[in-house]
Length: 256
Image (cartoon, rainbow, N blue to C red; front, side):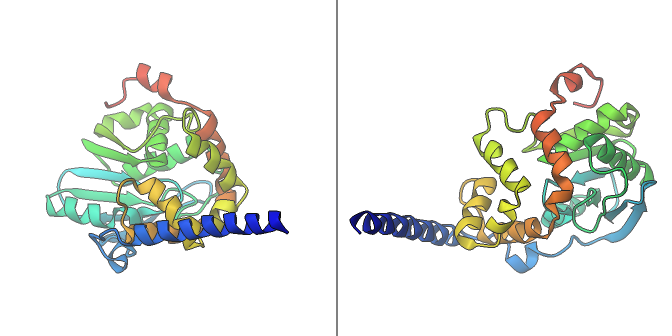
């Protein structure tokens, strides 16, 4: 009985600390409200049909020099709703898209290997005849941008630069304990469940957003992450963990 009492006390203590942590996160200031962050970006929506049956949703706004925005894993082009508005206000044409298996884009017969998604990136650049543009890749979106330039080097002629934001060239689990733990949990379906609970989901979101994360932004991320069919995305996760494009990209003539 004494052992059970101690076990209950320990579990209760952990639960109480977790609640305090969530409450602390919720006290962080929200620069933008949940209602604002959960909206799709303003712009003209169109779909690009790929040969394998995939449909890629795109949203375009503004006029001027072109910036193409590629979101991260497990979310959608919704992550750019504030950024795109700011860029349009600065005089840019902004092109956003859901890469296959995310948001309103589907996965066709060819699956979701990086080289396949690279073809979608190329299709977006060609569809909108991007010239002298800047490609911005966030997180896994940056990994796929690198894959695009290596798989289809001719796309480099359409770009004047590449911006990799909180991104990587592969080997996602190397020297990254959190990624090493998260990827198997995503594969097992556990992370989707985690995102349904404030007690675990908010700390997970906070670990991604960094210091003093916005609780509104975390909730939008959790909503987006739950909406994805992660089982479809397993081949990409495996490649992200195992395949590095660092050496090939360093030797290439792609935009810096």
